Length: 97
Image (cartoon, rainbow, N blue to C red):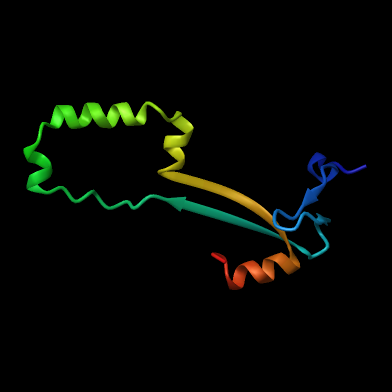
């Protein structure tokens, strides 16, 4: 029996679903981090000329339809996927494909 409990949990390729066996050189861990454009928004004089309180109230109303997690996911998201050798070789050459 292994001292590391994580070895008892089967690991599968997130792309094709094949079971992976860690430590055999055929498993790739891919960490993906995505975040919204960090530049401040462009605000024009026209944007500032309207009723700012009304605009803020409308925006707050729109945002109330979303959970805190949904809003956070629009700003920052990090995930880790596990890939087999075949899927990794395809993914690394065309990650957006």
